[in-house]
Image: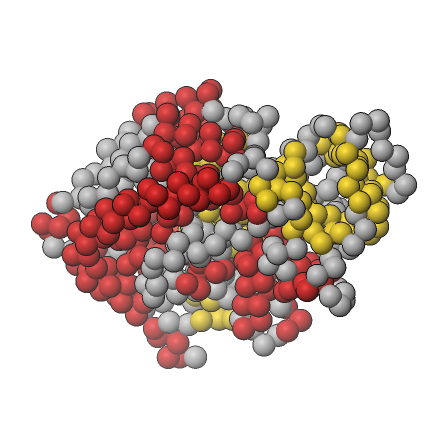
Amino acid sequence: MTTLIRNATILAMDAAHGATPFLGDILVEGDRIATIGHGLEAPPGAKVIEGRDRLVMPGLVNAHIHSSETFFKGRYQNMPLEVWTLYAYPLVGAPVIPERLLYLRSLLTAMEALKGGVTTMVDDFFDPPRFDLDRLGIVFSAYDAVGIRANVSNAIIDRHIFDTLPFAREIVPAALQAAIPDPGFTVDGYMDYCRSVFASLHGRGNGRLRFMLAPSAPQRCSVPLMEACLALAVEKGVPYHTHILETKTQAVTGEEFYGKTLIRYMHDLGLLARNVTIAHSIWVTDEDMVLMGSADCSIAHNCISNQKLGAGVAPVRRLLDAGVNVGLGTDGLCSNDTARIFDVMRAAGLIHGTATPDYERWVTSEEILTAATIKGARTALLDHVTGSLEVGKKADLLILKMDGFNFSPMNDIRHHLVYCENGQSIETVMVDGAVVVANGRLTTVDEDAVFAELREIVPAWLTEHAEVEARNKVFEPYMRELHRRATIRDIGINRYQGDMPFWTGQNRASA
């Protein structure tokens, strides 16, 4: 398929133009961008898209999402992460989601993402109790059918839950601790599983769908597991995707367990590297940020989720100054409640203005757009493939109408995209050279049929999940106490929330 987009406003996000728009044409041949220029002639048989009053830009990258939360959208409110996880990721009694619902859940996640302009998604989903190649294949099949580009993995935890949380062993009654079994994974067994995935699923969909390694967090995984995962990630050229320092409890965890921050712990183990992408990175110290920048690792900034769970504000300006690559993520759809990166862009553009009175250091619209596109692609190790409009790269792009509310009257396109746009103006979405959204409708699946099936079968599953939530409520008082202790704990180290010092304990008093 050959497509010529002509007379359009182009936001290339490449090294030559950055976020500076220009007028031009884009010729797409097959799955790649063939030419960008002016006055291009349409080859015989090419489809021509008139670009007047249209903006063409790279597809957005969601650098961190959990599709396993999609059916819980709008379900939980006013809970810190340590309490929220009891219900979104139950400790006891959660049955395996049926295969059809697993497929539909994955499909729904990708459908919403694509219609919101996300062409690349990094999905760290959870599917207990065991790793199953066939079930992972169901997720790959859903993403293949809808036409999205995705890095996919199911998160791995090989330590007992109460060995991953500070104070848990002393707070939670022994009888309740005994009710939670050990994960039961061996490093060799998990590596065998991963190699099977690379041999059978990795690269499906003309290379659109890739497997990545996703050890959940350093406090949740054994050192041998993390070392093996990083080695395999480097071997295969895929991300090592993890969570570090999302909450105050996790800030306390490093000091309690290892006598150092979790970033320093990773560094000392040799586990900070270019392949490493860290979700959240809120409670990092100055030293942490230097270590991260020196290692050339990335973060996925999930500012809406971090606000909803009361986790804090990542020090994005300071991370950028330290040389850390920053992408944007929604996080899961019950700690954010949408898959729209446009929402995250606006929130990220606004929240950092509250972090410091030094307005010259506030995050700019251009930096937000960069994080949502080319630097987001870099978090996924896909910046050579997507994230900018360049000759030879994959044709992953959006066409937005600029004659509606979100761009009228026109001032600065960058500001309009970050602060005015919400995905409403998207007319066309292209992935791998194929149009997957046309005139605001998906071309790859029957949206109405999917929603009809979801209405028919999901309510009964949610009723069953409500019973699981009730069984897990017994743990809530102990998680609340754990959260309280971590919040007030004096760990004797300056922490930063946003880009302004946030002192705790004696440090706060002495300030």
